[in-house]
Length: 448
Image (cartoon, rainbow, N blue to C red):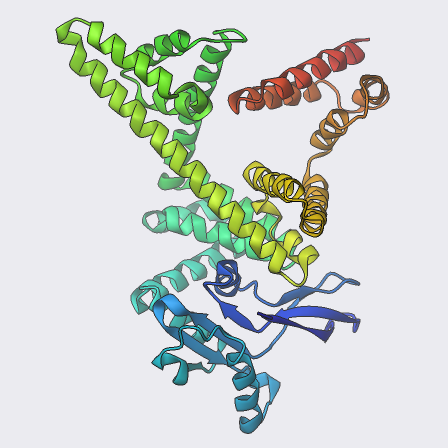
């Protein structure tokens, strides 16, 4: 189903004309991500290839959510389309919607007179009340006030509104920063993020968040150190000792399961059940409670992983169905993580096993585009490490190290060790060993 079309746009800043892909149909069941783009103000925002100015392209829209039986049409007044032509344009768009389950609401679509009205109708259908909308507008006004306040006056203003600053407020600031980035407004995004950091440092809620994060980081470091102390090939019995050590420290148990989920397999729990059966009667209740908690934690990790896989699979479908893959990938660069790359890799492997050359080539094309964007967004140090890992031979990696490692200095060694620890935590021991071997060579180069 075509949901977008190509048009020509004239940049209001430099006058450059260029082609742009605009979306005209938002079908929530077909492409859930499009709803997010609409609500966040990123829908049909294009960037001039000459001067970089981002503009919002006005276009007729049809919004459809079959689950909520919601169908809304919108024709921007600034387009100046006569009434009879509006009906024809909207009619053509409506005919492109799926018709296998047409219901009565299809014949009486709602109409939005403004983009804000369209957004409010969607939010209302999602259960967002007018009072909640006003609260969000109030948050936006306060954020704008924070952004316009000189730094030396910001502390007093934050204290004045201290009770207003909560998780939703900071989340809204983060969303504004993402919108600015998506619109190509790098400086504005950086200003918002800098102000958000200051608000966190100055507000009671933010200070508690920072303290909680520091405590969590300390716990994870302690658990990582304990895991490394078990050696290169720890046994289930070794992990059982750690579990018993952390029995009364739930945050440590959470970190342990999150870091080494594969260790807690069927055999581990079977061994633990046997241990409980052999324990003194007065210790069994506590051990059973500990086992039940471990089961809960592993289920939580598995559910999060499954959800991440489903989200990555949906994101991959969105990439494949988007008429402008390059722009979509660039716009959603922050969503492409290890899970997405694993899902993409599995799809490529499946296509190759099925002998589907066309699908394999298309998926590999997506892989190259995503990898290119990710590498462009990496820090120079990470790009350098990635270059080392991708070297065709050990000799080539050593040559790259000798030529380029001195430019990065000792900080490179710390980053390499951090990456190795991250690979260890994900169960990718061969890759961790490879990074540590390269780190040893880099250390020798830097000390020579």
